[in-house]
Image (cartoon, rainbow, N blue to C red; front, side, top):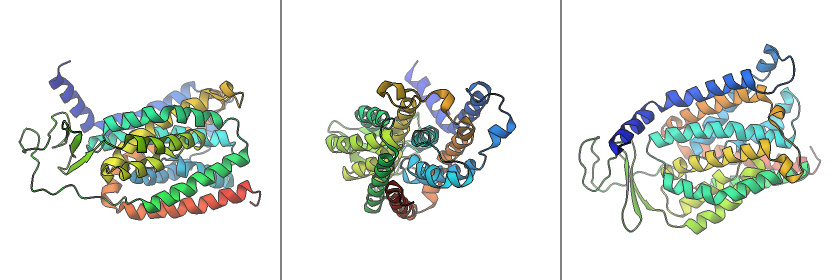
Length: 359
């Protein structure tokens, strides 16, 4: 396939990505209803039992994708504290599995939307995912064998750390560099600034011989940075990856901090982090579904998945992922970040009380 034809296909996909992305949950729900292993003689009541999860997960997915953190950071506490009020308590491994499956779809949706905006450094994302993989798998396998009290304690610790890191992080939208240059529309010329024909608008990326990256987004804003600092990011992503597999979140929160500390522009950091969290969530989901027998823990099979829950949580997170980039542009990210940080702190205290047997 010629590069010119590939560019046309890529550009067409990005232009209509919302159509392809929104088809995914339709196909998923159809496949689940028709083929998923479910209890015998299930009817309409079974499939509609948890319809109220749709608005809850839609709101949660919009919030976390706007900030660029893991969806399960809100989904898991919701399933621990709010879900039992309206239904029945869930086992920790089931909670994490539902959170991860939902998060994987939602972040994949939001990732494509951020790619459309030209705010994802795919080379950086893939190196981070490769480094996090063994830690994600190890954390997911560990989740099968740790006691529930330890699970709640570690979850509270992770949320407390995430709260601190969110308050510490400056996630305000940094302005693109203003050096007097303007970016032309596709087909035009702008000295020194890339304009990729396979991307929408004036978006493009260029890396010089010294590793300096110049990135232009769909609206014409340009960002300049380097990909240096791999060891520092690896340290954060290894710890975050372990918690990602264990509790369903962690790699996103630590990932944002590590990228900002290595001078990656905040909007590029948020967009790139979506790819990392989405891919690690997919991997952790697969281990949670099939990996229990490998460590002598709970043997979770497809049949044990609460399909009547995920048929509502998956479409909700996909739609929330598509909404997030627009909310990110319309609202001050710091406002949402501070709200989520306070919420994490409150939830972590509740988890510590639960682990201590006080609640």
